[in-house]
Amino acid sequence: MQKPYFRDIVSAENISVKYGDEYALRDVSFSVDAGETLCIIGSSGSGKTTLLRTLNGLQPLSAGQIEVFGDRIHTISGVQLRRKIGYVLQQPALFPHWSVAKNIGLVPRLLKWKPEQIKNRTRELLDLVNLSPEIYTKRYPSELSGGEQQRVGIARALAANPDLMLYDEPFSALDPITRTGLQQELLSLKEKLRKTTVFVTHDVNEAFLLGDSILILSEGRVVQKGSPDEIKSNPANDYVKTFIEGLHA
Image (cartoon, rainbow, N blue to C red; front, side):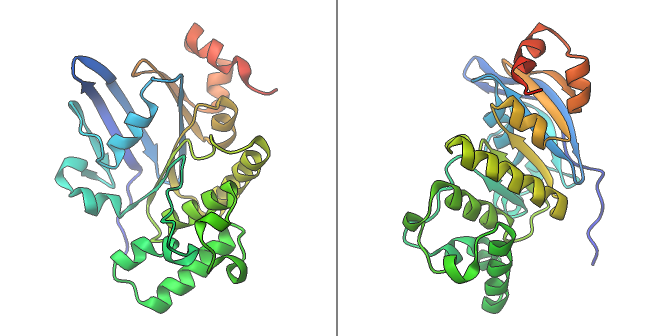
């Protein structure tokens, strides 16, 4: 049966998160359209990672509500929700004693896919992230460079063909050359797959390169949301002006 279409894959309305007496997020609202890439940027401690964790149910809300795929997240079990979402971390956290193929096939195995289907999907994804299946299928994480490990992490997140992808500063631990290469890989994947994506980064140039829209956080609040061109031409305040001063021409 064909999946229902939701214009907003993600919708957050006045969400807040408190740790004790301190707010990590306060009255945050935004939405992400189907096929859109939203990049979230802000200074350290602005609430970027906390916001990402609310979207897959890892961080409970203190107030407000989030809908993902048309359902309020508190009505969905955490396991059920997260199996529909691909999640890529700064450190790919591959299982060290599992081969590349076994790491990529994790979620499909949990979903009871047939072995041949998992094998074919694994090879397809390795090709997609520019890692030759003939070379990399049987390798182990310790035999991979940082960039190769992150490619495998992206393939693993895509394995069950999730409707939503979340990235939490996935390239920040990589050297500049590897990082630039993976940014271009992600742009290519964006064109090929058109996945709805929320991408957290502290790098303003990375955000403006990858994002269809940008959400800027400061001290847990949204200070501006718009397209890269809108923000560059009409920054909301001095904080945004300062933040985007580092953009390459």
